[in-house]
Length: 143
Image 1 (cartoon, one colour):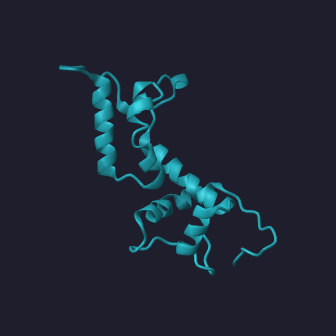
Image 2 (tube, helix red, strand yellow):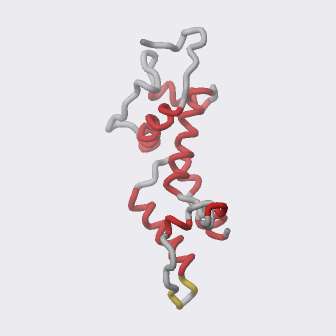
Image 3 (tube, helix red, strand yellow):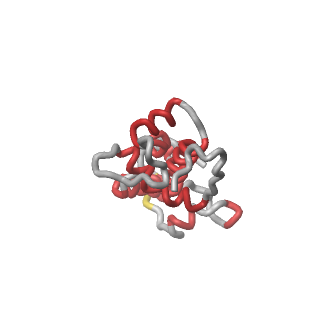
């Protein structure tokens, strides 16, 4: 519980905006693992794989959050909001990255894009593969 409340929630704001690099993720995971398995000066033996600890309590795990999955879910939330909602942040992203002739599904990652947008583009295909689209009045439909 302490790992989820403290060590998993500290990087949550950054996970919501940026795709976490593999090296940073490994370092955070080593801190969380060391916190769980060590007690002050005494090093404990690891009795189970760390991936098994991620499993929900109902499946025999401890319910520790997998930060890589959490990161993808939080970035996916931006894609869903961009497709379904209107707001100031959505309008800003549409004006900056989606010109008048492009849709989100047709948008590709470019080297000049921000780190935030590159992270969204990395999870975009996963999110769009699970979604369905309603054409509506056809004003935003392109073929």
